[in-house]
Amino acid sequence: MRRRFNYTDRQRIKHENVSAKINKTDYAVSFDATASLENMNLQQDASVYLEIYHGTVSRRYFLGTIRNNKRISDRDISDLGYVDYLMFRVRVVDESNKIGLILAAADKISPRDKEGKELKQRSILPVYWHKDLGQRIWQIEYSGDGPEIYFSKSVPGIKQMAKSDRFFFFTVYPAVIREILTYLFLVEEISNLDDLDEGWQKDWIDFARYFNPENIPDGPDDADYKEEITDWIDDVIDEFCKKHPDKWKEFISTMKEGEGV
Picture 1 (cartoon, helix red, strand yellow):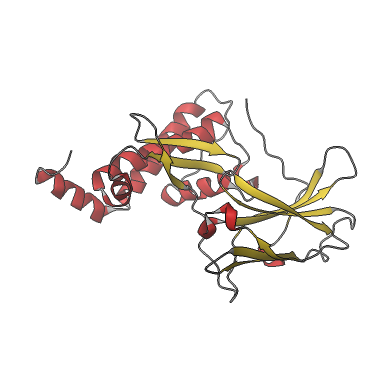
Picture 2 (cartoon, rainbow, N blue to C red; picture 1 turned 60 degrees about the vertical axis):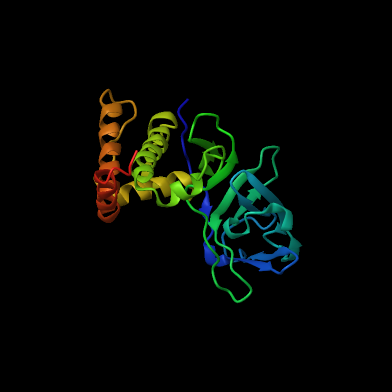
């Protein structure tokens, strides 16, 4: 099934209009948040929601309406975990009909500490280590917030391998990039790339364009599209590997010394 994206009538909320702070102590984690939306051209009785999330874990809060929205203060989120990777999103929803219509949105808002310093941002590919994948070393899963990679907890030393092993780097990570981009273009079949709003699809397209700024082939319905997009992804992976010459030299040196796989 082709997924189409239509953001024509949805306004974008600027991140600076949302204040979200994480407060950490030795005993608890809480947050304060507010959204300043009164200057936007939105109906005054529209509902404002704030969501704090990481991967598939999330919690939603009602802030009130555009006319009368409130500040959330000192809300305990100690049980959510992943404190360094929590992000915020805000949605303004017209709930006058049975199916709510999103009028405005902001996503992937980085929280700040009590001094106003931005906390660590969420990676475009969150990593998890708690699954037993049998004889598989890694696996990609997709949530509403994008791809997540799981490494098998049954592999001894898997964390260290993922962080520093050069053979691992040049074999696993190119395969991961290929799988995610293939899913993006050939499974979701996204189009109208320049119209994508903030979200994981745009993040991954920006990531790929960094390595291969050549125009992405158009037209999923074109007979040659699959071959063209596959070639484009190949070029992304080639450039990704070329960006790490020091790692490559270490990898080759290790293989020559007979220490590699």
